[in-house]
Amino acid sequence: MTLFEVFDWLELSAPGQYVRDSIWLFPAIEAVHLIGLALLGGAVLVVDLRLLGLGLTARRVTDVTLDARPYLRAALVLMFVTGVPLFLSEAVKCYFNFSFWVKMTALGTALIFTFTFHRRITGPAFAGRRTLQRSTGAVSLALWFTVAGAGRWIGFS
Amino acid sequence: MEALSLLWLAQWLAATGGSIALHESLYMYPLVESTHVLTLMLFAGTVILVDLRLLGFAFTSIPVSEFTSRLLPWTVAGFVIMTATGVLLFYAIPVRSYQSIWFRIKVIVLLAAGINAWLFHRRVEQDRDQWDGNTVPPRGARISAATSLACWVVVIVTGRMIAYNWFDCDRQPQSAFINWAAGCVVDLSTTP
Image 1 (spheres, rainbow over the protein chains, first blue to last red):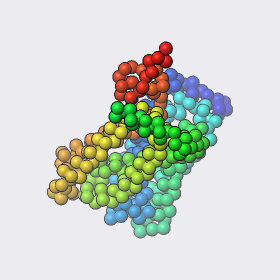
Image 2 (cartoon, rainbow over the protein chains, first blue to last red):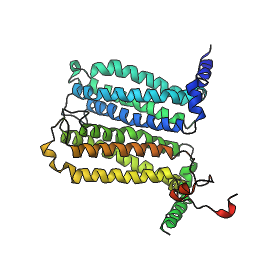
Image 3 (cartoon, rainbow over the protein chains, first blue to last red):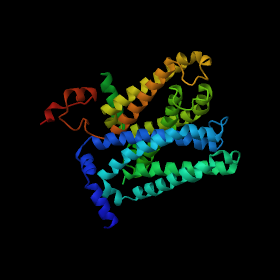
Image 4 (tube, chains in turn purple, green):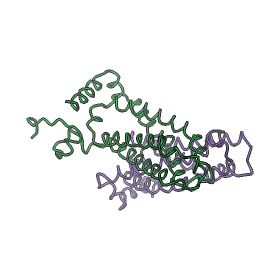
């Protein structure tokens, strides 16, 4: 089975059909996906700004990260459960869509970066390591904004 | 007559060179639109965090005054980008936007969100010194925060729906209510 056949099969799956057959379901799910984006943005930004020496500067990086973490996770769950049906409804279009692959590559990288490197650097062991913190915040922001930008661009192509 | 003159204004805007150029541009319109959407992360993201703090859900160990004052500049920056790109998006498609029920609901709820924020600063927040460090702020502040969250959710949803043409004036027949709410000028002589 080729990758294309997998995407074709996904598009023909029951949830894919269901979303595609409705005129309002795709827009409705898309709107919730955007609410998730806003929450994700807040949870990512507040930590990464702190890493960059901005925002909640009177607080420890570790504390800000721990406070934001449940909302980061909630946002990721919301993005995932809305993103999957959106994808299933137009999997073949996504297969041929350059922005889709940019988004998925950036998303994979962002997730791995967030739950490995970023997680370590925001830990107490790296308190005061300014350069490392700043670059981690900058890379994280760049990755997540690439995910969002490429995600938006799927709809233009 | 009032509504008619706003429609004339939209039609006049639509005929300007800048509006046509933006509307027909290959990359400029999508870029402005994407910036508008991505700024949700900055603007709505920081607003949501502040509302979650006021509800007593998030960042509860940080005093409300510190949390809001440290995030406010970022919210304001987001608001400026949102407004600038939003105005450009309207400028590119003035008549259709003006006659969109989604756009109209969005503008009304935007105003409601603005009034809610103003009331929070003028009234609710006045005795903040007494509850600044509280994990859960008093009822009034929580109502303000919940209202804010509800407003911004509606603004995001209706904003996204503007792109869909289900209720557009040029798709007749629409119900009398839609034609009234969207301010459609239905020419009966050409209606089949």
